[in-house]
Image (cartoon, one colour):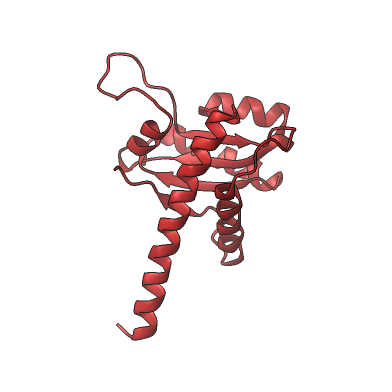
Length: 159
């Protein structure tokens, strides 16, 4: 491996970590402001009614769900809708960390866990909050599109 490859690899890792932290920061801030829509069905309903309010769509999946054909079909349809409506899309892994960030109960509980596979961040119709995390995530999505990576990926790591 050349020095240039090592520097590029290290830079990419730092960027991914920075974006991952920005996503976490954004989710916490948006949840506090009531600007999150959680669940595939709920997200589809909101995007149908008010797509202009959506600023980011997170599609979350872990390795064990990769073979879920129904979920993949939902993701394909949501991605197409987001592209048509200029909504930033980000694929994330780390459902356990995502659940922890959103204050979800552990999956070992007997109750059915909430569907965290699709999360929308909406921009409230007021300027009451502006998230630095949102700006960083939006920038990352834009840079990824310039590199022909239409649905960028970030891993959320358990802490």
